[in-house]
Image (cartoon, rainbow, N blue to C red; front, side):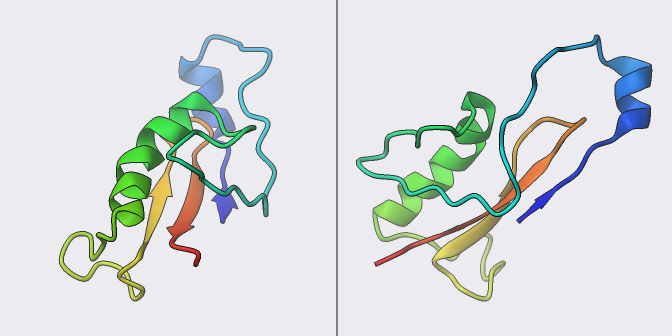
Length: 92
């Protein structure tokens, strides 16, 4: 849904890394059998997995009505320098 980059924080706190994120805005991932989709980084998957698992088991309505669609969630990976926001929803 959205990608950000905080160059000022990277310059101040991060050790230079050659390769951090391959995701592109607008990419779509489908989860089958609760397996991490190819191309999705491990860090993002660790954040998304508990919500994906709950949704795959028929759950939802996270945080008492947080989302307009109770079978969805708006989540971000845990990279504080380059956060990527994901919209996760049940697809029939």
